[in-house]
Length: 244
Ligand SMILES: NC(=O)c1ccc[n+]([C@@H]2O[C@H](COP(=O)([O-])OP(=O)(O)OC[C@H]3O[C@@H](n4cnc5c(N)ncnc54)[C@H](OP(=O)(O)O)[C@@H]3O)[C@@H](O)[C@H]2O)c1
Image (tube, rainbow, N blue to C red):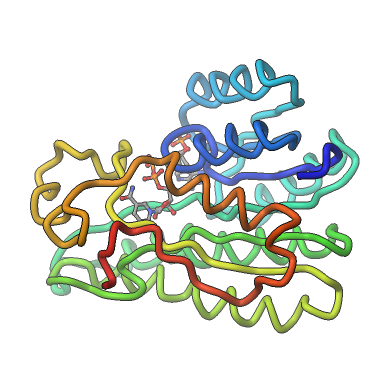
């Protein structure tokens, strides 16, 4: 990765986003992360990036709030002078049967997972130059829904595919790529490997285990780098074979 690369990782304070932030810094990027509630966790990621000799900043920005998303993009450019990589990672989980999903749940989950990702991509694209990268974190649930209880989450994550493909077409002429990474079950606060739904999820994968956030981050880092210049509009399952 070019040493001048500047990345913004939404929801970069914990889990997959935190691993992505550190991995991009290892590759030579300065990194801005957003978070919404856990400032201490965000501060730890900033320190981890700085320990790698790169610049970092944590910005409080709710992905469900259009003004805060736009401000996070603007602040990244103000601090670091440019924006090359957006990792649209901020997301919320949702589990429950169809009849238990309220309109407020729909607004909240689509507001972060879909509207937030859309607005961040829109704001970032306006600031990117040739070589820019937009990588959105989807889910294995966007490709294959293995049982009941995921209707709201799967709906939200399926939208990351449409967003990505349309962005690839929209931005290809400017040399900006857009791709989506679909993690399988990954051990994070959202989906702990010792949680109540862990056993069946691990059993759904070909490898029979949860993934680690770093295993997702490695694929994101590849897509963010110069060797992925001809990759756009594509889906990457990092799911232990969940979709196999
Ligand atoms: N873990 C899995 O098994 C799995 C599988 C497939 C897809 N994914 C997707 O991967 C992404 C990351 O998931 P994760 O498991 O790493 O989740 P996580 O452990 O819950 O971490 C979520 C991160 O996003 C931030 N965040 C939450 N809501 C936000 C909002 N409204 N605005 C800005 N930031 C927000 C959190 O910040 P605070 O600390 O401030 O709350 C935290 O940094 C999500 O899009 C998720 O849907 C996860």
